[in-house]
Image (cartoon, rainbow, N blue to C red):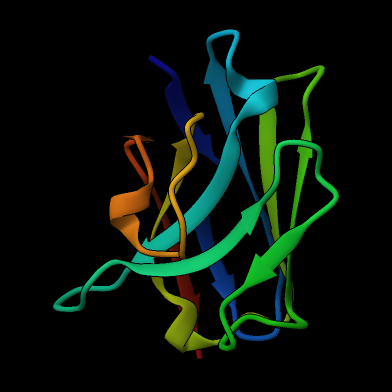
Length: 125
């Protein structure tokens, strides 16, 4: 089973940037689809971004398209989420997730097999 540890969260002013990292253990990382989700207080966990095992394909939620970039370094077993032009509504706990073969489909949380503990991102206005 893959274990995930997120880092890089913090407090930032609106318009600022943060880069989240998610370090994975286990030999299946290079074949895994990786995703980022977020959950704001009182709201359901929502999809943010995902990246294929090779990094050649990515997908984003409409709310972050053009502002966020997901990437991965398979040599380091790490996936990143670069967040630019942050808005107060981006405030949430951000979670990293892994989908190992056989892959699921869609962008629902249920597709993913393992989760990190989350990292808090707070954007002040």
